[in-house]
Length: 150
Image (tube, rainbow, N blue to C red; front, top):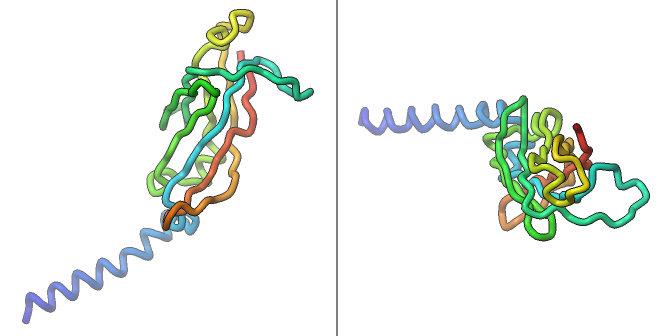
C-alpha cells in the first residue's frame, strides 16, 4: 500500500510542476514546436530601393547571432536561400526577435569581385506568423533586410 501511495504522490508533484514550467517559458513558447528562419541573401552592398534585380549570393555563410554568440548557422544554396531551424523550448521567440541578428560572414567579394572584401551583411529578424505542420506549430521568421556594415 505504501508503494502505491508513494507513486501517486510523485505523480501529483510532477503534474503540479508542468504548469509552472510552461509559465516560465511563456505562453507562446508552450504553443510552438519550432522556429524556422528562412530568407534569401543577395549579392549587393547597397539597399535595393529601386527594385532593380540583383544576383543572389550562393554558398554564403549565414549566422544567427545573439549577444555576440553564434547560436546556429547555415549556408545559402544556389538560389541564395538559407534555412535555420530552432527549438522554441530552448530559445525564447521574443528574445530572439529583439536581441538577435543574421550575419553573413562570407565577404561580398566572393560573389562579385567589385564589391568589398571587408564587412558583413547584417539583418534584424521579422516575425512572419505561424504555420501548422502536422500537429506542430512553427514560428516563421525572415530577415528584415540585409544591410552592409563595413
